[in-house]
Image (cartoon, rainbow over all chains, first blue to last red; front, side, top):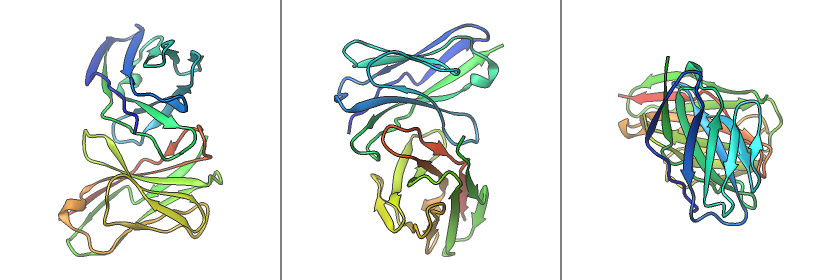
Length: 111
Length: 112
């Protein structure tokens, strides 16, 4: 299974942008890049996903490298409620069950 | 947004008891999943279902069993709980393909 590598933790100041990196050097052509986040005592929450092009939604932006071996989740203005564990996962569009969560990046937001 | 419900939220039970963790979703999603997550650790897929009467084991071996008699319901059963089963169990559903997963808030199980 394709896997991802993320830093264990990152810290940000409130109201500032946050760039969360993810490496996925073994990505295949059929893998979508998904990001989820998990707040304390809750289940993971979908954030954004993409295949090749950069993507934007109301929660975040996803920047995908041209060779697709890495991606970056961008939170444009971090708030205290964005403190969570962020997971970058690869999802094979031909096998819906084939994806791997990994240990994620714990984001701490300072006031 | 998808609504997916898990009960109970917390469960403390003695060794040897039979337990069933409930998971229901109201969005008509065909695909449903069970994940196991220890505190501060990654999620591991233990069961999934393509639809009614379809269940498969996931990547992590588990002594639990599941059933899918109705689209909206995907319960997980442990016939004889042991302390090693202590963990958080998360249920999820999706339309399929590259569609997002929608998670419940989990059941935190403690077996004494």
